[in-house]
Length: 351
Image (cartoon, rainbow, N blue to C red; front, side, top):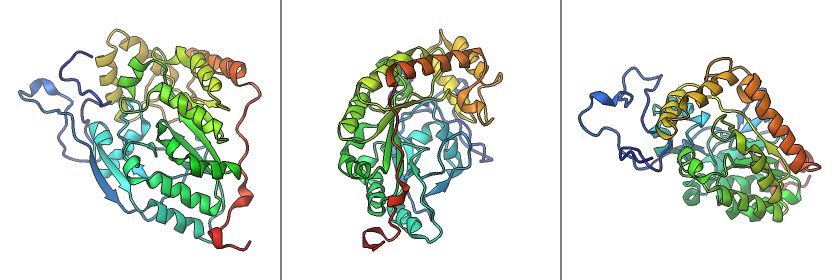
């Protein structure tokens, strides 16, 4: 990208209007502005003190019953991220605000312990995070995720973790203890081995080689790990599926998962702007193929179809994925978690 106005290090390039606000400053029509209105923002941190941190997941196609997210917003800036829309509930933009105004739930470890101690709590694996990345850059300073994992270890509670940041290696000491009790599984998100694509699509994330090294580090320490090759975007990274899964298998991955891209709410405008600026020659092809996955629209909320897609292109993607998984991950799988280890009273429990 040679455009001097392009905000390097950011995914979104503007702030779309917030659907919940009657009035707001927007940067969608810059042709009428005679001075710089969009600048690369500095990251701001906001503290929040929620009353609960474990959330019930009702969606039938997410494969998890509960999730918890210590951070809202994500400095990684992944252009396709469906979590962008949730930033609007806080009065912010799903664009630049999502990746520059980060909300930290600073009491998350305390609230987690409180919820696990409730008599009504029934042990079930919890996904950490499921929305924004629990190992995004701010975690290096606040260590909320590490403290939450320590609470889970204390109570011997099962957890699934998904991240695309190599910072998770900092917590291998805790994860090894959980793995010894069959209480943890980790998925490392790897969307492309092409660093030129990764730099603009996921600008503040670890490189693909660092992520593969992370898979290897976790695997070598006995921590069950797989890769999530998501989202698959036809015309951009769909052809990488075999190489992604082979590389993951070579580094010790036990399984792989995938979803196709969907662009709900403000994400559709943000992604469209990004795609036109970074891949103008491919824009019509990529955009039309995304539409073909979701009944003619990039916006899709239909359970089942929204994650898997439908039609000829979806069929091709899933055939490539199934073949690659059979070829490179045959005979491997994630071990089941042991739900019998849960200690409601923590280390002080006699039962």
